[in-house]
View 1 (cartoon, helix red, strand yellow):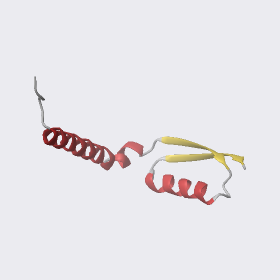
View 2 (spheres, one colour):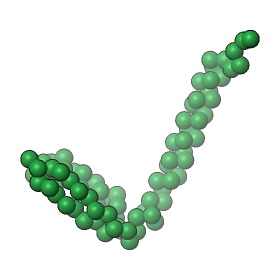
View 3 (cartoon, helix red, strand yellow):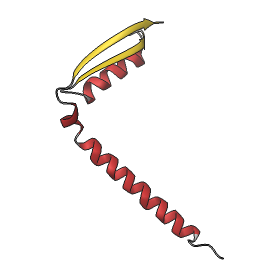
View 4 (cartoon, one colour):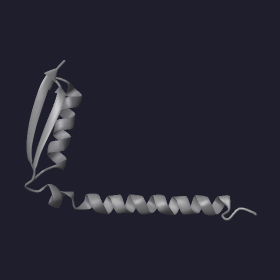
Length: 78
């Protein structure tokens, strides 16, 4: 018995599936503001706020989760 699908067909199929997944993910993320609106989110961070990257993460969460009630808890581990 020979191959059912050629290598080109498998590549095309894989590309089609990948694009479909990316489009679905994009549509799901498009309405995230409606999802987070009014919800409570507690962020527990194990590192101290003096680290720039910890501050960057907090700023990103605040920006992307606007409308949610965010509470940050820092364990201040250095």
